[in-house]
Image 1 (tube, rainbow, N blue to C red):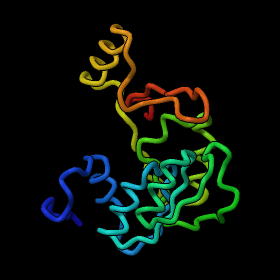
Image 2: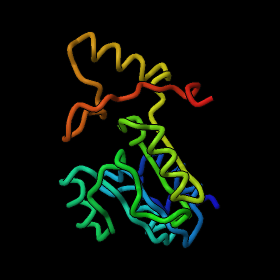
Image 3: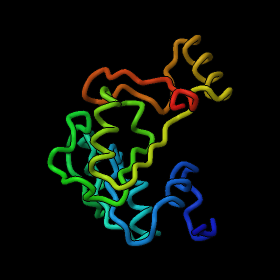
Length: 165
């Protein structure tokens, strides 16, 4: 079910809109690496989902709580052993998959816990992203929007869409 763009805040990113179109009304959602809760908040508002997030960054958790979202402090690399099999309709990794240390474990656990898994990640093969990486690295800068995180220097997987085939 497509939602008219006029009903959604114009600041919502295209990846959030794409995920919104995939999630059914009144479903259950687990958002892994939910950040400040932007996507989860959108899903609760627009799809009336019963949602829960997992986030490692304490400041982001405070932002989720301020949005009245249910969020747990946790490291998704450690697994999801506290959740039963197929306990959520959807498990979502939106712009967080490239920062996990054990992608195989995270995907296996997400598949166990969710009936469906939605993964989005930056396409580092896109020419605009390649130019950004080239010029920011060459000039001594950082890749904007991507950090090692507060809890150590995690590898950031510079993947392209073909890596999944």
